[in-house]
Image (tube, rainbow, N blue to C red; front, top):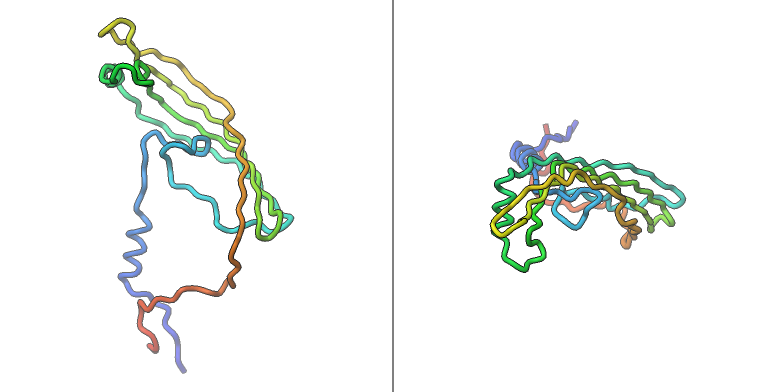
Length: 178
């Protein structure tokens, strides 16, 4: 009687743990409601939704930021070159809360259409500006929030492959019995 062994080499487990625990980080993360700036690596599934089915999702992305000191804000404002659009407008945030409502629907088995409506709230907004030449002040502007742009997007599956197809690489030993 032959029994197949399903044990994987130790190096494969170590490689999996090492690559699976690498983190990615960004400053001033964008989140669900602000996709045009740096942020967490989050993606949607590559599969489409079955025809006639739908899914509704509510997301919350919350970032608590350490904030900059008054000295850092005023120094950054003083170092901006004259005439730049950012002149006298260096800002800081304490937190970003990005909510999003999403609805996706399977038009066909190969086509999914989705809508996403974000709502973003920024708290602890502070800004440094120059009142008189060489005289800087940090002003607390409070919070700002609002609904973002409605996003309509779709996914189309171009290739249909059988579920049991895969790529096999010779990384182990074959024909081994226990």
